[in-house]
Length: 264
Image 1: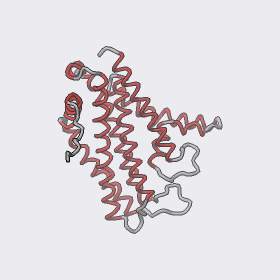
Image 2: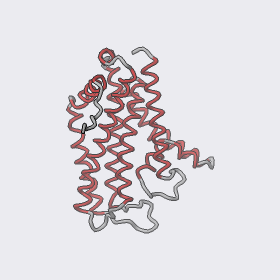
Image 3: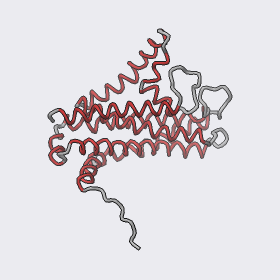
């Protein structure tokens, strides 16, 4: 009886992905960032687990204040994923290495797929390290206050999804703007200035529900499972994940189109 053979990865795909991975791990910051995020996750989760309390009725944060450190670790990981994605794609144009990259990977679709795929995996690794550090702290110091269950599991899963999505969004903006600095500024400006302003304007106009379609709101809703149920700014958790994935697809598609249609 012949055993089924596993599909092999095409040589071109393997070569392109390996090249993109080496661009990350060849830099010291790329190697140091995962353990740094694990340490940050452990420290902030320890602080909240020791001083915080467990889930309380009618509290905004469904998992209790003892898990605040976990959310902070996820925020840091998502931000790092977005910045790394933007820098990884935008640096190709800043250092004018995109021509050499395209010479060895002439298929623009394959080039884009390799960049986004590796960025997504690296973003997943960053979030996993941050959450692992936070989990160790919660288990060690928060057994009496942290409620381990499906809701907390959803927070961990939402953090992983958010990091992957923002890593890909960073790549899309890096390719679209062709500058790491502009891409990072665009992400920060949107999340910390433009979207909060839209929240205020929408609330003043009586249409606060519109902001549930924005990426920042969707990110919060994806991670904060069961929290802020009365907020008109956050869609339900499942809807939040869908909205965030849609924004990821739009940013990725924009970067892919610009990469294919414009001269390098």
